[in-house]
Length: 149
Image 1 (cartoon, one colour):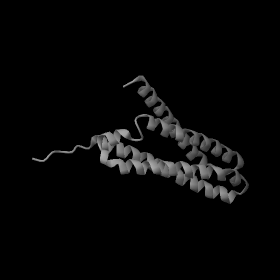
Image 2 (tube, rainbow, N blue to C red):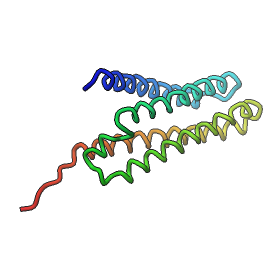
Image 3 (tube, rainbow, N blue to C red):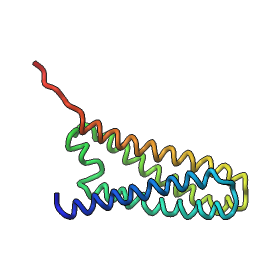
Image 4 (cartoon, helix red, strand yellow):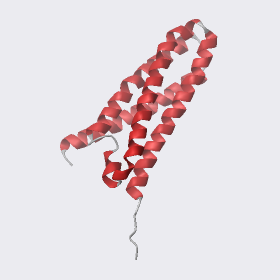
């Protein structure tokens, strides 16, 4: 491995850890009572997540391409990789849409409650996406195709 590859992998680990912490912070904030200060913190955490998501994806692509290690082992799984790539873009877009609704939510508590539910749904979608990514990678690396007798 080259030093650039190692640096990229370390940056990816750091961003993934930060993302994990931010998602936990967002989960905690969404469990707290809705008020103006809470929603400002939610906005700050969402902004930080919106900053890290593209960086993380860019780092994954720098390692030869998005989930390239899967395609190296299972080239015919390209449709799965493309599906996850599209899903990632949709998840980022949805969080951006929710972020734009936050300033309005401060004024209308009913909207804030709805937004809380939508952000929780976004978190679930993000975690599910991360699990599918990991599962695809693990399956590709552990799949042994036997030969017939």
